[in-house]
Amino acid sequence: MKKTSTIISLLAVLACLTLTAQEPAKPAAGGLAERIQQLDKNGDGKISAEEFSGPQFKQMDKDGDGFVTSAEASEYYRSRTARQPAPVTPPANVVFPEHVNAPPDPASATLPVSASRVFTDLSFARDAQPGTKDDRGQWISGTETMRFLSHQGKLFVSTGVWMDTPYFQNKGDQPWTGPQILVKESAQVPWRVDMSFPQAIRVDAMTSATFSTDGSGRKLDPPVTLLIASPSSENTATWTRDDATGKWTESLAQGGLRGGLRSFCTHVDAVTKVQHLFGGSTKSGCIFRADYDAAVPGKIRWHDEPELSGTGRVMCMAEANGVLYAACGIHSEEPLSGGLFRRVDGDKPRWELVWRWPHLIKERGDETEILRGLTAIPDPQGGGRQVLLGTCNYPGVVYRIDPNRNYAVTTELDIRAYFAKAFGASTLQGPCLSAYNNFLPVTDPETGEQVHLLGLWINHPAGRGTAEEGSAWYLIRHADGTYGHGRVFDPTLPKPNPPRGLVATRTIEVSPFPEDKGRVLYFGGFDCANIESHNTAWIYKGTLKERL
Image 1 (cartoon, rainbow, N blue to C red):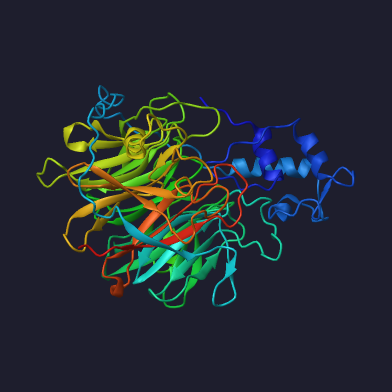
Image 2: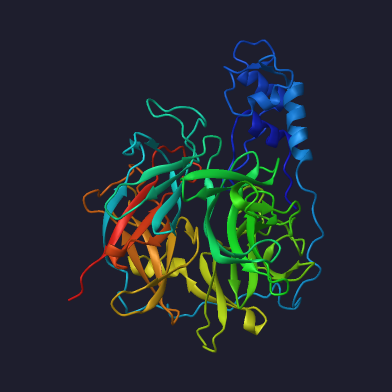
């Protein structure tokens, strides 16, 4: 089982690093005394605000004398860990124990390559550039474009500033903004800063949630739709946008629990008929539940205790056939430490484990332990039922999970093999990280065919410095389970973000603007991959070419 040392966690606090789940722990380097000595530039045995400018300084400086001692730093860490939620009772049982660790059916020896060219060939142009000011004079910042979302006729996008180190400090004439939410109000206007979170590192999750009931089950007529986001910070919280004023309000989910939420999903309990919002945490392996409540700040009331805890990162959630599912990172070989869980609705709801995907437990990082992009799609076999799609970086595949057949799993696509063939290479080296968000359903405006688009990070064998390697890529899944792919590339910018290029497609969204008629899509991304980065987030607009 993984163990996280107190020393490492404390050093992370002292270094003022609001760590994301992808960032590995820093080595202890001699312990607390040595780290204080490194920060203590004048050698007086304590740390001043000038020596450590992080936002936690005032919280650590208990006596308010303007200095942080080793004792105060230690007490700060103990108080934070004491506020972590106590683990709740784990799921009552494992469903289909004979199947829960069953290996997936292997991928077909014949790659499922589609003959269709739908969405494979778009005309791309850069649509926003961090390191510039918007039309109101506010700086646009970001190292990663995290999540597009259409909401009330506008297009929103969240960003992150992971690896824009040193954190919480200005870079030249550009002030520190923290992660941001940008808004595009029409097809013709430029992106504008809507909200900045200067004490956070990422906005990991964002959703447009429509509530049909409040927490008591009272029907809301008309239903209420809220834009909700969760930045990583000292508390796990959500922020709700008031669309009438443009103001954002915080709703605390769990005080003292760092990291924010990584995933959202709404679900109507089949027994109580109450609609809930569920949030999966970035760091603590918890699933929290919230209700609509017009009387509380942000109109979201979070329940005090998590419904599920003790797993790895809750990367994604989806509803299929009226059942809520969550993919939680597998952080140990304990049976209930992670996997695909389903919620059993009722007055006393519980979560049950249904499948654990192939995984590799490591001391540092969790990419080999998680499943991404959980999305419900129509069952290819018909019958009006749904199956689930998800991807794993280890070993680089798309899985199709069938709840209607005791959660039988099929390896639908070997992503590495697919792109090796597409690129004319015998093998493909490097990362194969896909589905940073969900599989996006998109309808071809000419044929009416519905496909699903999937962003990913894959390295082109042409090598660094080439236009091919500087591009980003995406997959198109067709209803019959075959795949095509596309390239994000602006010919006027053949080598963007030198020397690394676009790196990864994290998020895709169809333009919500009527004049675009479903022919315009927005793409965004980058992945810092633990490398210091600055203003590397990208947003491109892709337009469907006219067909002859």
